Length: 298
Image (cartoon, rainbow, N blue to C red; front, side, top):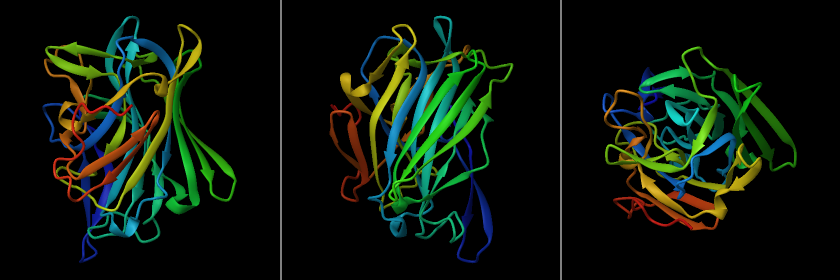
Protein backbone atom coordinates (compact mmCIF):
# COMPACT_ATOMS: atom_id res chain seq x y z
CA UNK A 1 0.00 0.00 0.00
CA UNK A 2 1.37 3.42 -0.80
CA UNK A 3 0.90 6.92 0.24
CA UNK A 4 1.33 10.01 -1.81
CA UNK A 5 2.44 13.18 -0.08
CA UNK A 6 2.31 16.79 -1.06
CA UNK A 7 5.71 18.35 -1.62
CA UNK A 8 7.31 20.46 -4.32
CA UNK A 9 10.88 20.07 -5.49
CA UNK A 10 12.52 23.48 -5.93
CA UNK A 11 15.06 23.17 -8.71
CA UNK A 12 18.13 25.36 -9.22
CA UNK A 13 16.17 27.30 -11.80
CA UNK A 14 13.58 28.03 -9.08
CA UNK A 15 10.95 26.20 -11.05
CA UNK A 16 8.56 24.23 -8.87
CA UNK A 17 7.99 20.61 -9.74
CA UNK A 18 5.40 18.61 -7.82
CA UNK A 19 6.75 15.39 -6.36
CA UNK A 20 4.30 12.64 -5.44
CA UNK A 21 5.63 10.53 -2.60
CA UNK A 22 4.45 6.97 -2.08
CA UNK A 23 4.81 5.83 1.51
CA UNK A 24 2.43 2.97 2.14
CA UNK A 25 2.94 0.70 -0.80
CA UNK A 26 1.13 -2.05 -2.61
CA UNK A 27 2.36 -4.00 -5.57
CA UNK A 28 0.63 -1.46 -7.83
CA UNK A 29 2.91 1.44 -6.88
CA UNK A 30 6.63 2.24 -6.67
CA UNK A 31 8.29 1.92 -3.28
CA UNK A 32 10.35 4.40 -1.28
CA UNK A 33 12.98 3.86 1.45
CA UNK A 34 11.77 3.04 4.96
CA UNK A 35 13.22 1.36 8.03
CA UNK A 36 11.42 0.83 11.29
CA UNK A 37 10.76 -1.29 14.30
CA UNK A 38 7.87 -3.24 15.74
CA UNK A 39 6.95 -4.97 19.02
CA UNK A 40 7.39 -8.73 18.95
CA UNK A 41 3.96 -9.89 20.05
CA UNK A 42 1.45 -12.44 18.83
CA UNK A 43 -1.33 -10.80 20.81
CA UNK A 44 -3.79 -8.76 18.76
CA UNK A 45 -4.49 -6.00 21.22
CA UNK A 46 -7.59 -3.95 20.56
CA UNK A 47 -6.13 -0.51 21.00
CA UNK A 48 -7.79 2.91 21.09
CA UNK A 49 -4.63 5.03 21.57
CA UNK A 50 -1.05 4.80 20.38
CA UNK A 51 1.83 7.19 20.96
CA UNK A 52 5.49 7.88 20.24
CA UNK A 53 7.91 10.65 21.13
CA UNK A 54 10.11 12.10 18.37
CA UNK A 55 13.28 14.17 18.77
CA UNK A 56 14.93 15.92 15.78
CA UNK A 57 17.38 18.23 17.57
CA UNK A 58 20.53 16.30 16.64
CA UNK A 59 19.85 16.51 12.92
CA UNK A 60 21.70 18.86 10.56
CA UNK A 61 19.16 20.37 8.11
CA UNK A 62 21.91 21.95 6.00
CA UNK A 63 22.92 18.40 4.99
CA UNK A 64 19.39 17.06 4.43
CA UNK A 65 18.04 17.29 0.92
CA UNK A 66 14.24 17.64 0.80
CA UNK A 67 13.11 16.04 4.07
CA UNK A 68 13.15 13.09 6.47
CA UNK A 69 10.05 11.63 8.12
CA UNK A 70 9.31 10.13 11.55
CA UNK A 71 6.12 8.10 11.67
CA UNK A 72 3.99 5.85 13.81
CA UNK A 73 1.76 3.55 11.75
CA UNK A 74 -1.07 1.26 12.83
CA UNK A 75 -3.46 -1.05 11.03
CA UNK A 76 -7.17 -0.62 11.63
CA UNK A 77 -9.36 -3.40 12.95
CA UNK A 78 -13.02 -4.20 13.48
CA UNK A 79 -14.56 -7.11 15.33
CA UNK A 80 -11.85 -9.78 15.32
CA UNK A 81 -10.17 -8.88 12.03
CA UNK A 82 -8.11 -6.23 10.26
CA UNK A 83 -9.85 -3.87 7.86
CA UNK A 84 -7.01 -2.99 5.47
CA UNK A 85 -7.00 0.66 6.57
CA UNK A 86 -3.83 2.29 7.94
CA UNK A 87 -3.46 5.34 10.20
CA UNK A 88 -0.19 7.26 10.36
CA UNK A 89 0.89 9.91 12.84
CA UNK A 90 3.72 11.42 10.86
CA UNK A 91 6.01 14.42 11.25
CA UNK A 92 8.93 15.45 9.11
CA UNK A 93 11.89 17.81 9.02
CA UNK A 94 12.55 19.97 5.96
CA UNK A 95 16.21 20.19 4.97
CA UNK A 96 18.06 22.91 3.08
CA UNK A 97 20.52 20.87 1.00
CA UNK A 98 19.96 20.73 -2.74
CA UNK A 99 17.58 19.65 -4.10
CA UNK A 100 15.23 21.29 -1.62
CA UNK A 101 11.46 20.86 -1.45
CA UNK A 102 10.49 23.81 0.72
CA UNK A 103 10.87 27.56 0.66
CA UNK A 104 13.72 29.04 2.70
CA UNK A 105 11.27 30.05 5.44
CA UNK A 106 10.36 26.39 6.04
CA UNK A 107 13.83 24.85 5.84
CA UNK A 108 14.79 23.51 9.25
CA UNK A 109 11.15 23.41 10.32
CA UNK A 110 9.22 20.38 11.55
CA UNK A 111 5.81 19.74 10.05
CA UNK A 112 2.80 17.71 11.21
CA UNK A 113 1.28 15.48 8.55
CA UNK A 114 -1.21 12.83 9.80
CA UNK A 115 -2.74 10.64 7.12
CA UNK A 116 -5.25 7.81 6.62
CA UNK A 117 -4.79 5.29 3.82
CA UNK A 118 -6.50 2.38 2.17
CA UNK A 119 -4.28 0.58 -0.30
CA UNK A 120 -2.70 3.11 -2.66
CA UNK A 121 -5.31 5.76 -1.96
CA UNK A 122 -4.93 8.49 0.60
CA UNK A 123 -8.34 8.86 2.18
CA UNK A 124 -7.66 11.75 4.54
CA UNK A 125 -4.98 14.32 5.29
CA UNK A 126 -4.48 17.92 6.41
CA UNK A 127 -2.86 21.09 5.18
CA UNK A 128 0.73 20.71 6.39
CA UNK A 129 1.16 22.41 9.77
CA UNK A 130 4.42 24.04 10.89
CA UNK A 131 5.31 22.93 14.44
CA UNK A 132 8.43 25.08 14.68
CA UNK A 133 12.19 25.04 14.20
CA UNK A 134 13.81 21.64 14.77
CA UNK A 135 16.33 23.02 17.30
CA UNK A 136 13.62 24.84 19.26
CA UNK A 137 11.63 21.63 19.84
CA UNK A 138 12.57 19.34 22.70
CA UNK A 139 10.16 16.60 21.66
CA UNK A 140 6.94 15.87 19.79
CA UNK A 141 4.46 13.39 21.23
CA UNK A 142 2.63 11.99 18.19
CA UNK A 143 -0.51 10.24 19.48
CA UNK A 144 -3.62 9.31 17.51
CA UNK A 145 -6.67 8.12 19.46
CA UNK A 146 -10.12 6.80 18.65
CA UNK A 147 -12.86 8.82 20.33
CA UNK A 148 -16.58 9.63 20.40
CA UNK A 149 -17.66 6.03 20.12
CA UNK A 150 -14.92 5.20 17.62
CA UNK A 151 -16.39 7.41 14.91
CA UNK A 152 -13.31 9.63 14.66
CA UNK A 153 -9.57 9.61 15.20
CA UNK A 154 -7.97 12.58 16.90
CA UNK A 155 -4.34 12.98 15.81
CA UNK A 156 -2.65 14.92 18.61
CA UNK A 157 0.82 16.45 18.32
CA UNK A 158 2.02 17.65 21.71
CA UNK A 159 5.07 19.82 21.14
CA UNK A 160 7.41 20.61 24.00
CA UNK A 161 9.71 23.50 23.15
CA UNK A 162 13.19 24.10 24.53
CA UNK A 163 11.81 27.32 26.05
CA UNK A 164 9.75 25.17 28.41
CA UNK A 165 6.38 25.91 26.81
CA UNK A 166 4.06 23.28 25.36
CA UNK A 167 1.59 23.56 22.48
CA UNK A 168 -0.93 20.90 21.56
CA UNK A 169 -2.12 20.59 17.97
CA UNK A 170 -5.13 18.43 17.15
CA UNK A 171 -6.41 17.16 13.79
CA UNK A 172 -9.64 15.19 13.56
CA UNK A 173 -10.34 12.45 11.06
CA UNK A 174 -14.12 11.94 10.92
CA UNK A 175 -14.45 8.33 9.93
CA UNK A 176 -15.64 7.84 6.37
CA UNK A 177 -18.67 5.68 5.72
CA UNK A 178 -16.47 3.24 3.81
CA UNK A 179 -14.06 2.84 6.75
CA UNK A 180 -15.22 -0.03 9.02
CA UNK A 181 -12.37 0.33 11.54
CA UNK A 182 -13.04 1.09 15.18
CA UNK A 183 -9.69 0.36 16.80
CA UNK A 184 -5.97 0.02 16.09
CA UNK A 185 -4.17 -3.31 16.07
CA UNK A 186 -0.92 -4.39 17.73
CA UNK A 187 0.73 -7.73 17.09
CA UNK A 188 2.10 -9.89 14.33
CA UNK A 189 0.77 -12.62 12.08
CA UNK A 190 1.44 -14.20 8.70
CA UNK A 191 -0.63 -13.86 5.55
CA UNK A 192 0.12 -15.91 2.44
CA UNK A 193 3.61 -16.51 3.82
CA UNK A 194 4.32 -12.83 4.52
CA UNK A 195 5.08 -11.54 8.02
CA UNK A 196 2.65 -8.76 8.93
CA UNK A 197 3.28 -6.29 11.79
CA UNK A 198 0.21 -4.23 12.67
CA UNK A 199 2.05 -1.50 14.62
CA UNK A 200 5.32 0.03 13.40
CA UNK A 201 7.52 3.00 14.24
CA UNK A 202 10.19 4.20 11.87
CA UNK A 203 11.75 6.71 9.50
CA UNK A 204 11.12 7.21 5.82
CA UNK A 205 12.67 9.01 2.88
CA UNK A 206 10.74 11.32 0.58
CA UNK A 207 11.06 9.63 -2.81
CA UNK A 208 12.08 6.31 -4.41
CA UNK A 209 15.85 5.66 -4.19
CA UNK A 210 16.42 8.88 -2.22
CA UNK A 211 18.82 8.66 0.74
CA UNK A 212 19.14 12.06 2.42
CA UNK A 213 22.17 12.71 4.65
CA UNK A 214 22.59 14.63 7.89
CA UNK A 215 19.60 13.40 9.86
CA UNK A 216 19.29 11.78 13.27
CA UNK A 217 15.90 10.96 14.75
CA UNK A 218 15.26 9.66 18.24
CA UNK A 219 12.01 7.72 18.83
CA UNK A 220 11.14 6.67 22.36
CA UNK A 221 8.44 5.83 24.94
CA UNK A 222 6.26 4.19 22.30
CA UNK A 223 3.10 2.67 23.72
CA UNK A 224 -0.61 2.03 23.47
CA UNK A 225 -3.79 1.72 25.49
CA UNK A 226 -5.20 -1.80 25.51
CA UNK A 227 -9.01 -1.61 25.66
CA UNK A 228 -9.41 -5.21 26.85
CA UNK A 229 -7.39 -4.77 30.05
CA UNK A 230 -7.92 -0.97 30.16
CA UNK A 231 -4.21 -0.46 30.74
CA UNK A 232 -1.39 1.46 29.10
CA UNK A 233 1.37 -0.74 27.72
CA UNK A 234 4.81 0.43 26.68
CA UNK A 235 6.82 -1.23 23.95
CA UNK A 236 9.75 -1.21 26.38
CA UNK A 237 7.97 -4.07 28.19
CA UNK A 238 8.17 -6.19 25.02
CA UNK A 239 11.05 -7.11 22.77
CA UNK A 240 11.35 -5.16 19.52
CA UNK A 241 13.02 -5.83 16.18
CA UNK A 242 13.83 -3.90 13.03
CA UNK A 243 12.12 -4.21 9.68
CA UNK A 244 13.32 -2.86 6.35
CA UNK A 245 10.81 -1.31 3.96
CA UNK A 246 10.73 -4.21 1.51
CA UNK A 247 9.41 -6.40 4.36
CA UNK A 248 7.42 -3.82 6.35
CA UNK A 249 4.01 -5.38 5.75
CA UNK A 250 1.39 -3.82 7.99
CA UNK A 251 -2.02 -5.14 6.84
CA UNK A 252 -3.87 -6.57 3.88
CA UNK A 253 -7.09 -5.87 2.06
CA UNK A 254 -9.70 -8.44 1.19
CA UNK A 255 -9.03 -9.95 -2.22
CA UNK A 256 -5.30 -9.14 -2.26
CA UNK A 257 -2.57 -11.77 -2.16
CA UNK A 258 0.35 -9.54 -1.10
CA UNK A 259 0.01 -7.44 2.07
CA UNK A 260 0.44 -3.67 2.04
CA UNK A 261 3.76 -2.31 3.31
CA UNK A 262 5.07 0.89 4.84
CA UNK A 263 7.60 2.37 2.44
CA UNK A 264 8.28 -0.84 0.57
CA UNK A 265 11.96 -0.17 -0.26
CA UNK A 266 15.18 -0.85 1.63
CA UNK A 267 16.50 2.29 3.34
CA UNK A 268 20.21 2.23 2.57
CA UNK A 269 22.85 4.23 4.48
CA UNK A 270 20.89 4.01 7.73
CA UNK A 271 22.11 2.99 11.17
CA UNK A 272 20.77 2.83 14.69
CA UNK A 273 21.68 2.67 18.35
CA UNK A 274 19.10 1.52 20.84
CA UNK A 275 18.35 0.73 24.44
CA UNK A 276 15.14 -0.48 26.01
CA UNK A 277 12.27 1.59 24.61
CA UNK A 278 14.57 4.02 22.77
CA UNK A 279 16.03 4.01 19.28
CA UNK A 280 18.19 6.56 17.49
CA UNK A 281 17.98 6.22 13.71
CA UNK A 282 20.64 8.10 11.73
CA UNK A 283 22.38 8.47 8.39
CA UNK A 284 25.60 6.51 7.98
CA UNK A 285 27.33 6.89 4.61
CA UNK A 286 29.48 3.80 5.16
CA UNK A 287 26.58 1.48 6.02
CA UNK A 288 25.61 0.78 2.42
CA UNK A 289 22.84 -1.71 3.09
CA UNK A 290 21.42 0.16 6.04
CA UNK A 291 20.01 -1.26 9.23
CA UNK A 292 19.76 -5.07 8.93
CA UNK A 293 16.28 -6.51 8.66
CA UNK A 294 15.15 -8.46 11.72
CA UNK A 295 17.82 -7.14 14.10
CA UNK A 296 17.03 -6.89 17.80
CA UNK A 297 16.39 -3.35 19.07
CA UNK A 298 15.79 -4.43 22.69
